[in-house]
Amino acid sequence: MTTHELPSVAGSGEWMGGADLSAPNSGAGAGQRLRRGARVWMVVVIAALAALSVLAWQGLRPPSAEMREQVHVIPKGTWARRIAGENLDVLPQTIRLTMGVQDILVLINHDDVPQLFGPVLMMPGQSFRLPFNLASEYQFTCTAHVSGYLTVIVAPEPPWWKLFLARMSQRLGLRG
Image (cartoon, rainbow, N blue to C red; front, side, top):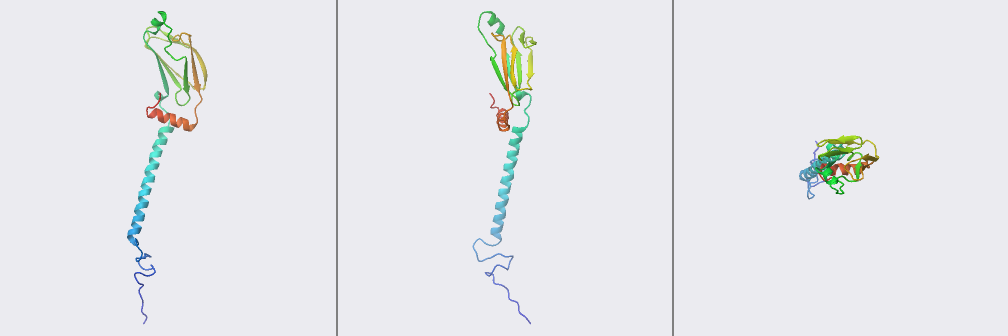
């Protein structure tokens, strides 16, 4: 008859699934703490990736038409003030737009008389919306200017990272 010896509890660690119970922080408790720590890090990484995905979507999705508009208003009384001799420019001499960021010019005529912008006659209370599809410099006839002309400069679409920053600032309400 043969006898079998059981390994000692503080032995080589072959008994009880390989855990060396003689070492501090050993056994099932250390393994559970390790697994719990890994789960916490996994949750943190997943949450960070989700937040970055939402941020990337906000910056990379195309802006709405309203966000791409640059609006200029011809105020009431502009023509009367000009006839009275006032040297008055109610619109900037040069309007700068950027493809993919702000590439739609909107003019609103609140004056009491019609205003001419390029070939378009805007009656009092009317607005005119002009989207640009090509980066270039444009000259328009404009009766709201003393000089009679308005220049619109449309810059090319910026690199993706500048476009991302511009769109994020628009969505956060930081655009000028």
